[in-house]
Length: 288
Image 1 (cartoon, rainbow, N blue to C red):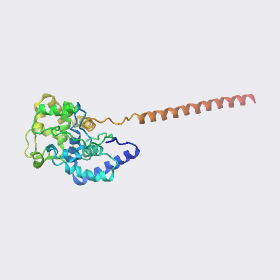
Image 2 (cartoon, helix red, strand yellow):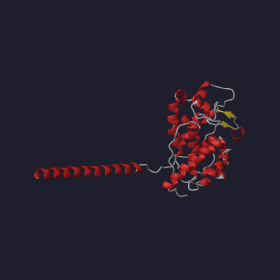
Image 3 (tube, helix red, strand yellow):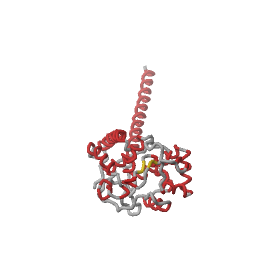
Image 4 (cartoon, one colour):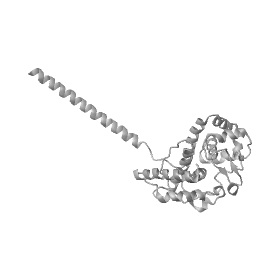
């Protein structure tokens, strides 16, 4: 499919869709599943083959029927209402925008969103997303394949501060934190606290404490929410742009600088004209 033309009209539609997503997420309390939709569409990326990634392919039954995507048809259907109002926006952009908005409306950090992703109907084979029953080697295998780092693994795991596991979808049950609709650093605090009745810790969560490189980030984020937010923003943006080269933003600054230079040149010319006229005026006065 063709790349969308990200012109002024497209950007206006993105702003309108953002507002509609805020309203939808507030009404349906669906931030967790919207974030999961964005992650699962993006998380299939393979940095070696340049396949998968945030391209909207998860909307196809072939992909949303994968076991790791159980329940995501709910989020896909919710997004259809927004898509119907803003048909110009690609599914790829819409799903990633939904993830950004989900974080923001639940108290999380603001994540820079750059539109322009191309839709695809080519679905990756099942098995590219993390398996919650596995440990450290598996996490690294999955995330390194995407081109992400250890820091990204831990920061993105902090997204489990939102939502809960559902037994009919994953075989696990329960929330990770006491306030599953609030985006904060409590996932890491709870992870270091140990087992807490009613709260969930998956094998992939516990793996973050077993590896010293992972653990140092867990400990940092548990005591410093600002550090978590800063790193989460960077990792989320990286995930949402895997395989996508955002349109260069250098055009605007260049135009702005050109305007400033032009204005400066005009200013210099006017000033010079004033000086010259003043000189002739004074010379004329002396001749009288």
